[in-house]
Image 1 (cartoon, rainbow, N blue to C red):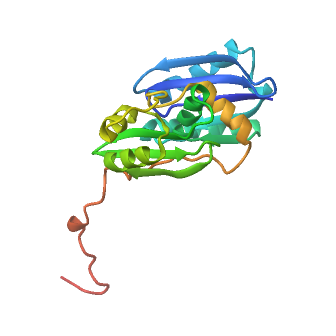
Image 2: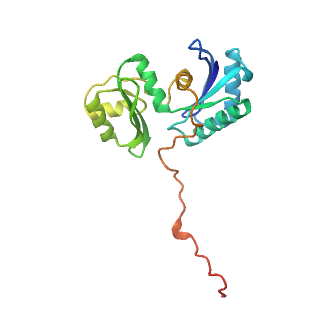
Image 3: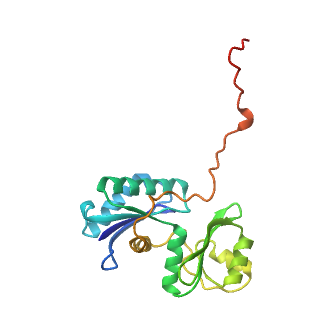
Length: 229
């Protein structure tokens, strides 16, 4: 089965074609955008398909990064994956960025627990802890730097993600460090999706609520029915 993987969770707009039976990547296209995923994603997908010698008709599944990450990027990627899956009548499979970062770290440090953590700003860390067998034992959840450092000191995991060096510094000791990026290599998403198989339809993983909230104090009360001025 050929699988298309899409990642718009962070700065990258990435896609790759993966041969699940052979366990190898066939082709990819990656742009470092920052913003503008919606305008470029379909072209990136087309380039990955061309490079991989594939077409839409030959795909058996769509994999997509579900976050945590950029609110806009996640919506773009997940919407595209679900739309393509619907049209092609194939499954869409979601993979979190933390799971993918942990898997990439394990490729370098096999048989180790991994704490994947992203710096979310506002003194928040988005984290997930995986044991030596890659079983999720904590998260994905919002935590603080001190709490993440205490978790790391207790379990001595490999650290991965944008908050990895901060956690090591806060814990005051040395750790093995995996990828320190905001997202994993695109082929990792494809490999994990091929292993996981079909599940629930993917949806963005938002660990923090939207910044914009209704200003309840300015809502005018309704006039009672029948009351005249």
